[in-house]
Length: 254
Ligand code: ZN
Image 1: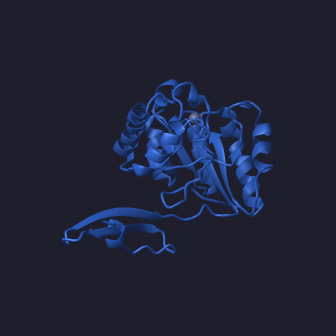
Image 2 (image 1 turned 90 degrees about the horizontal axis):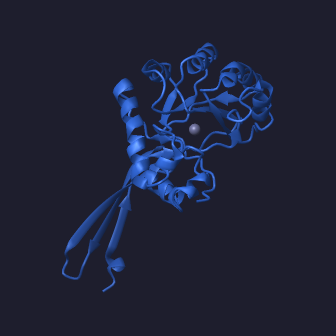
């Protein structure tokens, strides 16, 4: 018998309104036995054009994260921090209390461990989720993969792991964010001018600009003021990523 014929799908989705919606699946067989199942669907907001999303990975770190927080505060700009298990607890608290978004980058940032298995990845992720939750009460579902979802280094540790992780994180309720501008502050770590130019030369008004930076870098903490200056005087808005922001994805290569 064709069960599909007797499948009834109902939902209250309004795709013009950000929110979480329920979809109900109901199936009835010839003897009128009913079975129901539910699924939730989230409607998210597209990352906004003419906006700069400053995102900082790998912290917190005393001496640089606090400096960046000072600048953000003085400019009244909100950003997003994808944190690890390093750095002082005080800075985790400060990120949240000053209105920034906080997300998980992983505890160890050790590619060989986190990308060796799905279980390793989530065990490691959980450590930071708990740290944030214990210190701030925030139960974040924002994540950034070390190396981004497009990284190929993970291939060395497990073939296909990123393809599995992008699906598995979403099905566990996480939202992952890549970037479309790399400040390259990992590599040109001492060259402030280069970092500045990598950012400002790639900004576009007609799209959302998600910038990858690292708050553990001294040069980044010293150049962030100038980058904000440029953004503000050129008509950009600064926003934090939130759990209502649509995922920002790169192409998965493993
Ligand atoms: Zn990182």
